Every structure is written in structure tokens, then in C-alpha cells.
Amino acid sequence: MSLSEFEVIREFFNKKELALDREEVLLGIGDDAALLSVPSEKVLSISTDMLVESVHFPKDAAPAQIAKRALLVNISDLAAMGAEPLCFTLSLALAKQSERWLQQFSQGLVEIAQRYNIALVGGDLVAGPTTISIQVHGLNSSENCLRRDRARVGDLIFVTGCLGDGAVALVSLGLKTHLGDSFKINKEEYSINCQNYFNSIYFEPEPRIEFARSCGKYIASAIDISDGLIGDLGHICKASGVGATLFVDEIPYSQSANCCMSKPNLLQAALYGGDDYELCVTVAKTDQEAFMQAAESTNTPVRCIGEINDSDRICCHNNSGEELQLHNESYMHFSGEIQE
Ligand code: ADP
Ligand code: MG
Image (cartoon, rainbow, N blue to C red; front, side, top):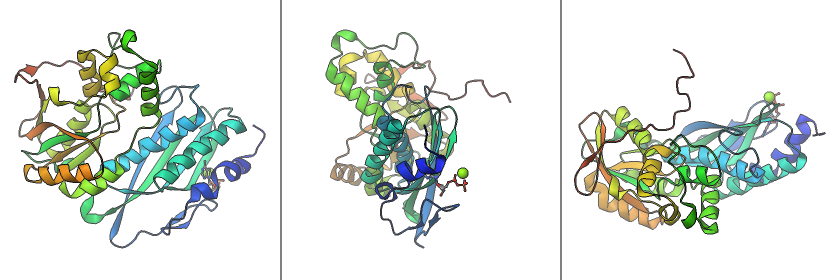
């Protein structure tokens, strides 16, 4: 790449399509820091997620797709807080990307930034193994923040969309999962439609922003499902000091996943797979009706898959009321690699 650092920033990132027109952004790219004005009745929510080549996206993936996934998984964290996206920063370590790569990467960012009205306000650029680190900022009204530590005994557990697609998509893309050798696609049932579906769900997960903001007043606690339902619901339980029963036969799967995966593998994918970026929320029984109506008004499919209780664990029951014995683990970014 023959462009200097400043030329890259000017050409691909400091442009009006990414700056958007948000009155809260007093100063965007170009100074030592961005300046934001937070309206007095609002609170700022901040989250960051890093994507490393060959770990969080395939090395040969299309640059626009990489950019979209990087920004969307970050926006999903804002959805899990019930926040409205405001702005983001982008720190890039680039190996030897071409101008064409940068052009397409930038174009992918523009598409998502405009879709969610989230402005690029700064970042950093270094040479190194390709890594994308995004920090997103969102606005909440102070009484409408969705937190993990607010689940109460008796709450119903709902999920948006379908679970398990993230893990199936990894296999579909030829990437490794941590779910073992028996976690594989049934090739006879695997059509080009399935393949296209999993490609798009992997690179363009849908952050449930509108749902979370419209249904927030009926939601007691929330998390986005990035590491598998058991792990992520486990975070809600731990933070709230409660337990849960899951009705595993109620877990929703996509048509494509149903087509090409065995039933036991579907369950593995939903419980332990991760990368789904759907929301898991708990709702008081008295709010159930209103919650479901509000969800429908945003065209978001929701399914009740369990209930919060006063135990200290998550147990899984099938339709016949039998408890399932499950042995697996959610995705761990560090399994024993960091010594205490
Ligand atoms: P500094 O030397 O103060 O760290 P830089 O030279 O890294 O500043 O960046 C100059 C300006 O460009 C800053 O406003 C910074 O936020 C912005 N910037 C740098 N890299 C990126 C990027 N990848 N995307 C968006 N803005 C960036
Ligand atoms: Mg810098």
C-alpha cells in the first residue's frame, strides 16, 4: 500500500458518508479526540469488541463483509443495553491490505453506519496482523437501561429470532467450532439456499435495536447471545442471583438449520454455540402480554423458552418434563491460556 497513514484516513474513513449528521457529535475525526454532547436526560452506554483475522472472520472473507460483521456485533451490545446507537471509533491493525481492500471495507462500514445512524468519530491505524477493534457509543434514557442483574424469580425467559445459526454458519463457512467432530452439516439436505442463508447470517447478524428500545419498559433483564444460551443466560442468573429452567423443545431454529442439522446438534448449537447475536430477555409474567404485543409491533419474533427460579443453576427440561443431562461448554475465549 503506497498511501500514508493520513491519506488512508482521509480517503477511506474521514468522509461524509461515515460522519453522518448527528447533532450530538460536536467534533468528529481530525483532532486528538472527538467531542460529544450528551443530552442531560440521557446516559451514555459504551462497549467494545475486537475481531482478529482467522479467529473472528476468515482470512479470505470479502472486506465489506468483515466490516459489516465488525460493526454489527458491536451494535448488538448496544441493543442488549436498550441503547440507541450514536457513534463509534475504529482501531485498525492492517497487514498488507490493498487500496481496493480498504475501499470495500469502507463501503461495508458506510452501509451499516447509515442503516443504524451511527457516526464514525475517530480511531487509530497501525501496521500489524489484521485486527479490527470498534468501540460503540449509544444513548439510553436513564430509566430505560437493560441490565443483566435485574432478573427476578418468576420472570419468563424469551429469546428473539432463531438460535444456533451462528454455530452452523461457522461449519457452513468451513471454520472450526468448539462443538466437536460430530457437529457437522448433513450434506444431502444442504442446498445453495442454506449456504447463502448462513453466509448472510454470519456476516450480517441483525442487532435487535428497535426491539430492545420498543420493548424495554417490559424487559426486566437482557443480554445478547454471543457465547451460547447456557453461558449467556448463566451471566444473567449469576448477576441476578437466580437460577433458570429452560424448556429446550421450545427453542426456535431457522428453517435452514432444521434442514441440515440433526436435532441433537441443533440443541448443541443453541445452548453452546454462540455468535447468534439474538437477545435473551426476562419479562415479569404481568408484562408478558404487553411485551409480546410490543415485540410484534417491531416485527420481531420472540419465543418463551423458560422461567427464572430461585435455584443456583440452569436446568433443561424437554416436553415430557424430563430433565436433560448436558455436558458441554460455551465458547471460552481463553481456556486455560491465562495463568492465574
Ligand atoms: P493521534 O496521533 O493523535 O493518535 P492519529 O494520527 O492516529 O491521531 O489520527 C488522526 C485522526 O484520525 C484522529 O482524529 C483519529 O481519531 C482519526 N483516525 C485515525 N485512524 C482512524 C480510523 N481507522 N478510522 C477513523 N478515524 C481514524
Ligand atoms: Mg493515534
